[in-house]
Picture 1 (tube, helix red, strand yellow):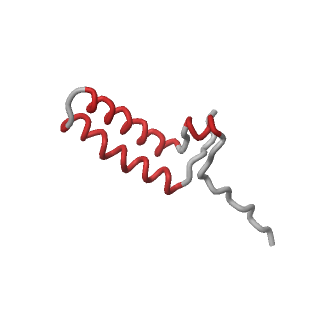
Picture 2: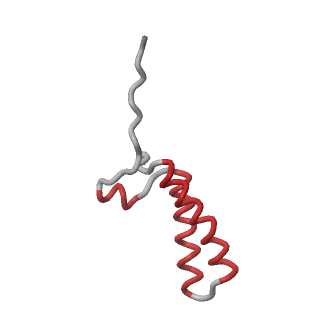
Picture 3: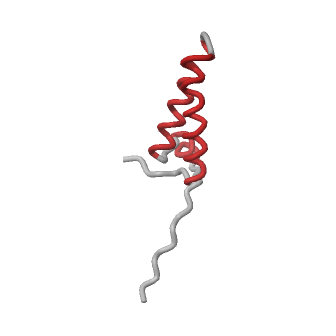
Length: 73
C-alpha cells in the first residue's frame, strides 16, 4: 500500500524523538502543548515503525537508499 521512503537513520531519529515526546506530553506538559507533543510523538513512532512519511511522499522526497542489485557469480 505505502512504499517506504525513509532511511534507517531517519527512522531511528523519529522513533527516538517520539518515545521522548509521548511521556513528556502525557505527564509533564499541560494544555495544548501536551496534546501537540503527544500527537507528534505518536506520529514519529509510527513513522519510525513503518518507514513511511506522508510529507515525503507528497513532495516526492526520500531518504531511503536503494540497495544495489546482488551480483551473481
